[in-house]
Image (cartoon, rainbow, N blue to C red; front, side, top):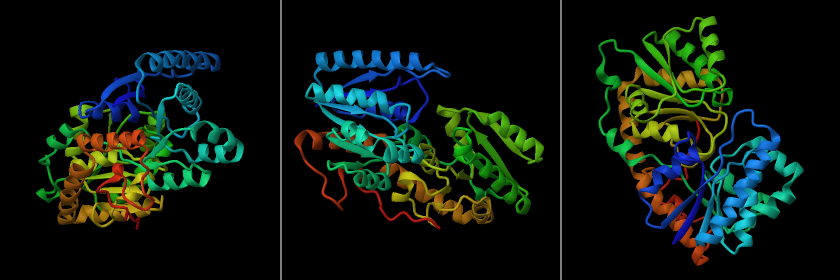
Length: 382
């Protein structure tokens, strides 16, 4: 099977590049990667148009010359990438090539705009795909509501096998005792929509009742300077900022923590939550995206529909006071991540989707698809 995968450069930060970089060494198909131009900050409208048109010309040549069996497009349901990827989809279909569109992110505002302003155009372009892939059953249902009649697969993102293997033994555990601090980790882009202010207010409440608690904020983003001022002005003590982390440094900060806090407003399938699970951390999270499909509150940590800091604080306070509960949840999460999220297994399921498309097989409604084999669909929030 010859696959042409459209992706940003693997050296760039971002979920799409990371996903296909992780799967690359585990795929058995004949692979080619089409690298799309990167969007620069403050890029002018006309420069953006020229870049997209040049991508389209290069893509046309690549499909004509390489003749793939299937093209994989990787947009998010956000405004910036959709026009370009829609154009690439039309080119591939015009050349008679099968196309799978994998929506890696989902923005509710973009969805509303599409439904209210341009649903007919969206259908005319993206519903020409031979199959759609999403990161949660919620998004599957919304595409069906929009009128897509083709196969829709619910997939997951992946954690590098080496990352999981290196996390076989926790560096420390809450059961160590001896007055050691309880370490809460917030690791993602530092943006309002990621719940950074909810995380800080949560920590302040937990700190009041559990003085030994400390917070690590790992990541970079547009809100970082404002967040630092927020911490300083409100005299929130024992908050450490690490900046953006990757590779071994990121693994170390996970292993040095006792629980992971993720109050993000909306997501597809947040990689950081899966990495936290792989490192044996209980997770306290907002019920977002694909987490709803598998996350089990009281067993993996706590998932809530609420965005109130006092709700998150109640759960983290419970973990801070119960080392045995932390250990049980962490052990379960590590085993679950190894079974369901390792890149080698996700790669097999992803290739199965593409083979289904080429063979004209359609996933049976209500049955487990190739992409979600083994995943629970009983996630519930408390």
